[in-house]
Length: 283
Image (cartoon, rainbow, N blue to C red; front, side):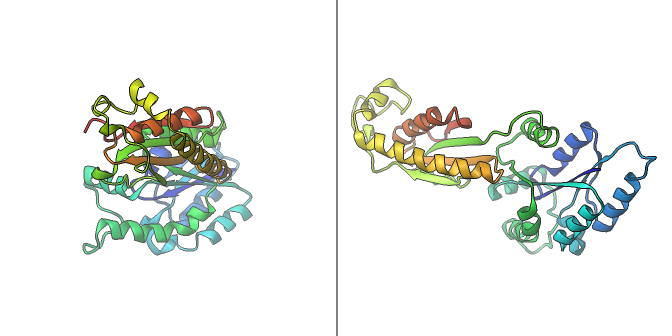
């Protein structure tokens, strides 16, 4: 019998994930306390039950009974079932924005704590099951279609897993990108802003590209960033992590950061699913 336990942060997409599992043939239950989980598995193991694929969402909504998740999973394995844990996560600012849009109440809400405090408390409660997870999916930049694709890949094995690399350029004068795993500062590089003919152009224009290509320091910086990201991507893959967020910043987000972001996208397009955005290029 196959059992999938879906867990993760509130607002990270567990309901969508459970819907996907139901569509591909799992018997699904949401917000399942441990005792009910064991009872349901015993029922489904009966010869009269045709479906032998069961999926359940287990998270902080069950309260104190959620504790001791390691013992729960150990008990499941002793019941001769194949257990797989999928943990869904998102960046804090994304979770807060989703709650603001839906106006839903956080399951740990006590009327006193801020959303940031509730999210931190939830992370601490979920730490054990996150460490045990077979797969950890960061849904910060995923839409429902992308999440569905990843869930099908994990459960059905219909395509190879590929790391998604999100590269963003930005201007430090407008604030650092808070969702990034790595931030690279390009403000020490030659700046075409002070050349009259290049001021109003961007790092995607041929004239600016030609300007940067004459400097060895620019080439060396890109080469060093590439080596760091190569190392990180290799080890992310070993840990079954799916998403890496990289930001490159300069003063205004129009020239140096844009050029480097574009170069990195070209360098890694054969190693990952690359998406590149330029946050401040039109400012």
